[in-house]
Length: 229
Ligand code: ATP
Image (cartoon, rainbow, N blue to C red; front, side, top):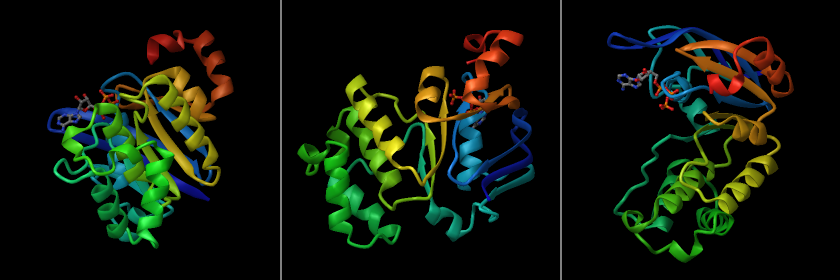
């Protein structure tokens, strides 16, 4: 079953065509990297899937549903590129609020689990405005994962994180074996650690999609992959 599907999607911002006839399908349980340079249309693609934007034409489906529906939202965990947790609330308050909003059972228990998992326990009483970029990013990740979503949409999830924390987060994603993951990145090596399939966007169009192991072949037959991403 397809968990995510885009059919001939066009998205414009005024005169700028961010996505130009994009189609792809991701089966439930797959891990896919959305790879491409700045401005390729990666963030726009994720925003369409989560229902924050509507396509100008074409269709976006999440498990066969329009993303705007409540059911689609409940099953999605979305990490925006520049996520902004509530600055005036503490780390714990942010987590408890979002967990309650998403109908999580045993909110306190779940929040404690994520504080531990992301090494945020020492900061639980700190307001977000006082946190480092790295700790804000960890909190944003916790907020995306707190309701145990079936589908994870992650926009540059390793931004602002130091190398040991990046490794910890990569292990966390790799332990979520039942989840469907679509991760946006412009870094090939990150794609290789998090996904086994790749969709390459360039100038708002899909220029290649397939298994990550075949990507090198594509690079040899075309311009080097490193120059695309
Ligand atoms: P980045 O990694 O830089 O965020 P991206 O691959 O995620 O790049 P998008 O952010 O989806 O790309 O942007 C695709 C195109 O749409 C770019 O040309 C960008 O300038 C434009 N764009 C994105 N958001 C807006 C907006 N709100 N208003 C106008 N143009 C926009």
